[in-house]
Length: 260
Image (tube, rainbow, N blue to C red; front, side, top):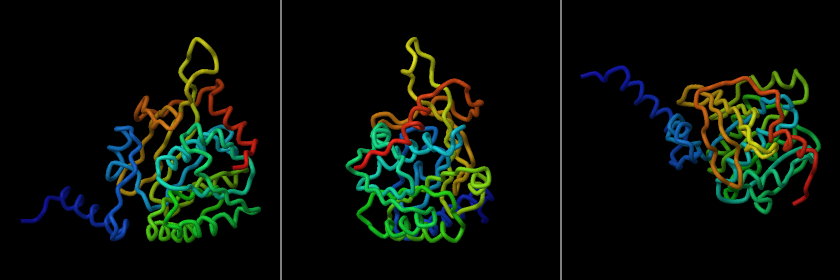
């Protein structure tokens, strides 16, 4: 008896996923938000692979919300975090706010964007690291495949934070890469409270691409004190509010460098 089409397709997807992950089975990293975890393959973010995070807010060149989102993922991975960057504007207290203690972060600074990817690839060969974060503007298909293979071999998770400064550079974030997932993060207005400035930051998080899952959007409360993200309004894509958000303060904070 032939398998029914849905069953055959599901079995083919499982085989493909097994081949993409390699022979070593790794437990996924759950977000702790059922609506997200249930949507992702294996109910969590795949470890030992490449993930891409893009800032989608009004001040995208400062990448405040995307930085918090990235730090929140790295904070839940065991081991030191290698953070490769070109600008001295990473705000250490902001990372701590997302649960990533500054003592866990190792900075690798370079002068040119083109030198970041080699640093990320070298870091991915160190199996003792929890994650490697790279802040890049350009990411080609060939380079991303190299990083994907390096991450699969070592089991170290690669998180590429896409930063751009011009419209032309922004268009580069739409080109295909070999990343397992692609996320877009933008700040939205916080819940209104009696006292101004006390609202917990909220994000619109778009899963733009994921192997084995469809695109989806959620409204989440931002990382705070190492706590997991909290889902607010699933499957909604509201317009960005015009009022100030807590993430705007972090965006300003990225201009202040704290040496670790």
